[in-house]
Length: 510
Image (cartoon, rainbow, N blue to C red; front, side):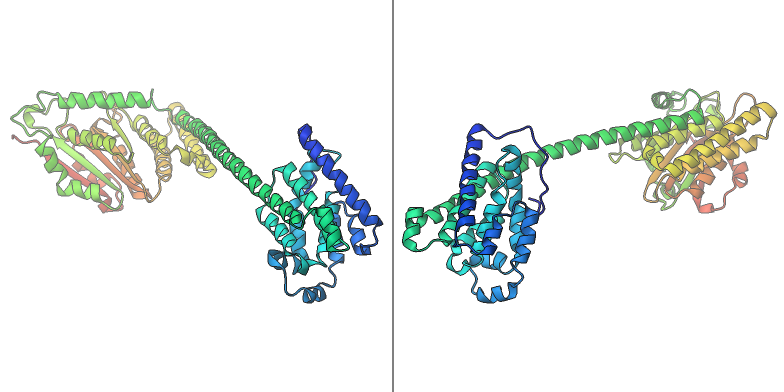
């Protein structure tokens, strides 16, 4: 219970008729006690003043005034009396603590059984004032109060009625003229003990009930919390998707969908592995032991095990007798790389793309790769600053595209804008993350109109691995018969030579 209790708001709920009669009876007995104290000469002025206390705040003032001589009082009671002596008599503050802890029970009774309950604070005040002068003579009373303090909360009616009854009997017991008279009043000396035990038993049963209710409430709160977390997560995911859709709208990739992209890759894989000419027995075939051997080679191991970002460019030259076919004999390395990533249980971050036979330009390819990566890091778009900066770069890209189409603005401005977008997306990934990009047939990064972006694609990849905070691993396969990358190596703009590995392999007879 709270150590401070404010009055409860009026409630439309009420106790049962049986409980109300119990409280009404207790109120009647308390009023009789109050009248007796007011008219009896046995009570001091301070004790009579206690019956005028109606609230916890009034009790605080009254109790402080009546304990102004606390130090002298403590010396007269230095022997103490059980837990009460330790917790209450030695300090007026501790008496106040008890009143604060018990007052919620009184407030609930007043709220649910109005107009009853208004005399309770006065009843307790009388007992505390009387008991303060009689403490050495009665340990049982003090132990009862202390036990209640230790065990509060409340099953309200039983505890309220029991404790008020206890206060009345205990006050009369202390103010008795002699043992014989109060033996008649109480029936037997054990009556006070019985009432003390009854109150404490009631408190114990309440505590058990409250603990059961608390367990149920905690379970309900946990379920509610989980439900709220799920709702928040759903809202966040929806917000992330909205922002990702806006990025996709601004990037404008050609007819892109994640499902379509994966179908195209799988169709390409099936076509490469089933190409009878490429896989004819007279030639080296990049699968089985040959693939294992290549993946164990120095260049491949350097790329895959590198502690920093790295670009691996594989240029494969088919045997001259099959140099005319559509597929490259090193393509299975890219295919195997994607297969391995798909089978990893740790959900690696990767993007993949295969150029179609008719070719595609950088504007078509890079947006698709970036979208794939963003789908796996969409929560990064929650960062307002990062999202705003990305959108600024995307709008600049769109402006350059429009100007290029309309006024013949140099194409390199548009390529530069696209590179900045790529670098912005790559910056979303942390130093602790490893990101893979696998592209097959980069030699087809051109169109039928003779626009050639093959070198531009590799230059963009070089800038990305040199700028990435994460471990960015890019692997791209080129058909060396279609485009001799080696003759353009010095034009890729490398600033960090260890970040780019170029490997050329000619297909031999087996």
